[in-house]
Length: 443
Image (cartoon, rainbow, N blue to C red; front, top):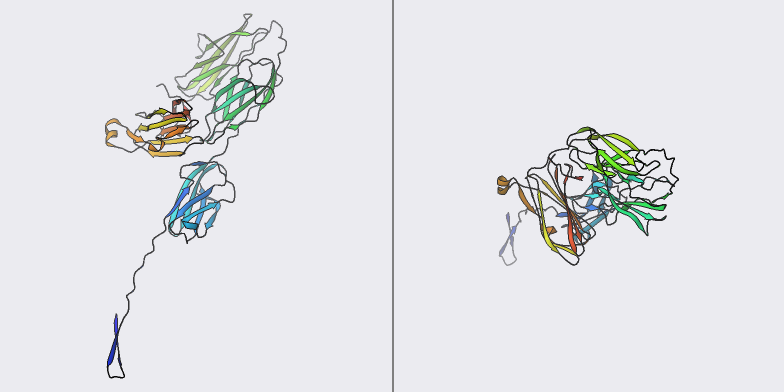
């Protein structure tokens, strides 16, 4: 727009001024770039009051941070005013219980989110042992953690004396857990004396969780009259076995006037008996009730019979087909091992989770979904590589590779790094939930 203004000067000249009005200029305001850098999405933490940290491209504007679990707000929103140099952090005022949480940061129209898991140590216990007792092979049992981050076994140690240190007379025994319970069955023969047992369970942390120690005394008593026969009894591990799963039948029999010298087992309940030791392993090929029998004989020739019915459950799901292949290659180093290859071949749609356990882990967990490729169209499987784990790993580090898909029975591999020795690799199957490693079905 232009306007002319004329004015006559004293000399008679006319001065004309042209006034230009600037047209309005359109302006835009980009949304700030907002990120959450800690905790990393998919990671685990043991800090009950985690500090949420991140960055923003707009340091002059406040950032609002809130925490949710299961879609519900679990902590009052925190406002971080004028984050210094674009870096911001917010610390919760109250402690959280273990569980899965999502941190959400907001600044203007920008949002950032990170989902993480807060883990806590499991509660490990040992049931009291009768004391003093003539039982030189006590059966120990107790409770343990049953969370996804808890190990599927407890480590049991028995020490001579009233404290859990010094001379280790038995163990460590690695006892599997089932539904948060564990049972070690009869332990090896203990001479007369005082003993202390303690159980430990690993979880997603640097140190295992320990039970309170249990102290008991073994005292021999005089043998009962010569006419007393043995008392036969038995138990089994796991308590709720599945088809194709290895089951340990354990004698809990007591000798009478003479010690037990032989054990004979009938795992089908129809005979014949098979001579074996106090522990007999078997598998059941069909679901439903199975009767098993145990015949014990003492040194005087007296015998006793025990029988029990075991309810065998069906396998949940079928094996993933084609079954995944985990390849790990590298070399042993002075401090542990150097991995040059970590790859997984699995059918499209499978979910691959790799977790690193141990204080030296640079990456806690990675999750990948296997995509369909030209190769999978021919072979039924695609290749996924994990270069982030193709690094040097320190002794004490354990990699856990889990491959799941829908209701299929998946693949589980653990790879434990040792100092100056070859790593220890264990392969097994895992239930569709991805929580419980177990032996693979035989058919």
